[in-house]
Image (cartoon, rainbow, N blue to C red; front, side, top):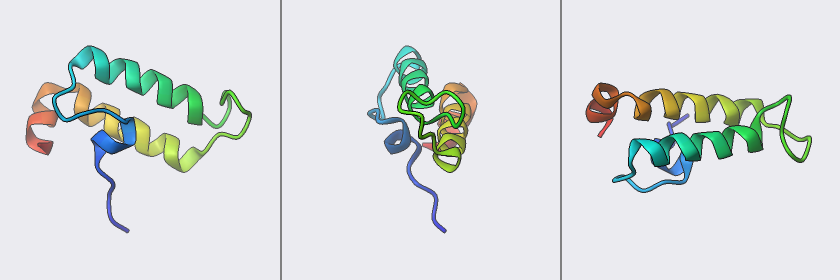
Length: 67
């Protein structure tokens, strides 16, 4: 299984600011969280990918290594 691009997972551009990364994470988390999804149909696997993407992109050192 290949990893998806973290920027695609969060739906942001590669030059996104930390504020935009945080906002995109919040939107995606709310949409796919298994317990609190807006439509009641969360996706645990996708939520885990969103969390992994955010952890990497929100840390400047990890983001630099990822890019």
